[in-house]
Length: 160
Image 1 (cartoon, rainbow, N blue to C red):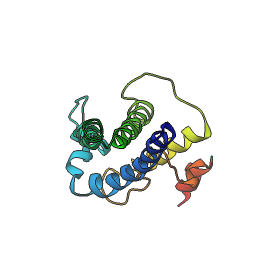
Image 2 (image 1 turned 45 degrees about the horizontal axis):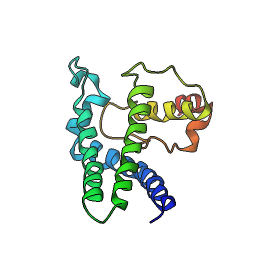
Image 3 (image 1 turned 135 degrees about the vertical axis):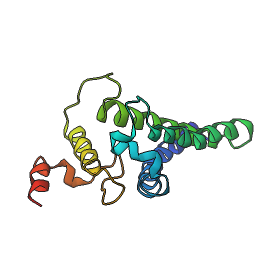
Image 4 (image 1 turned 135 degrees about the horizontal axis):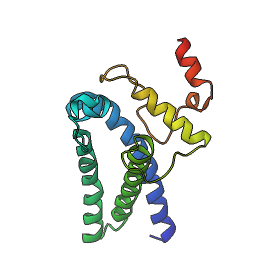
């Protein structure tokens, strides 16, 4: 395979990870592993700790990436290494946007001000408007529904 193919594998894997994150968030985190995710929606379950049970998902999601690195380097299937790299890049960006930017768990950079960053904040805020696992919306992170780009979104939500 050429360098272009490996780069393509990284980009495709990155894009697929947004769907995987959406699926895991909607059907696993808000499903049978709600016990791990609950403290992320309702801080009373966090009990004043910096870490949340929800942080365990970072470890779980690192397993496919680590496996792809190991198998890709230890077998003739080098392309799997680039799948692992794509997963890792997605995980890093997810961490920076979700934990650093949205939830401000680390004060590494100032609030961004762009149409896209405001849409991400609106979508995530809408998701966190519920403290239970039911009736949530906007389970993805990077691909935001067009309605969240509207400056009037908050106003329209208050009217309904």
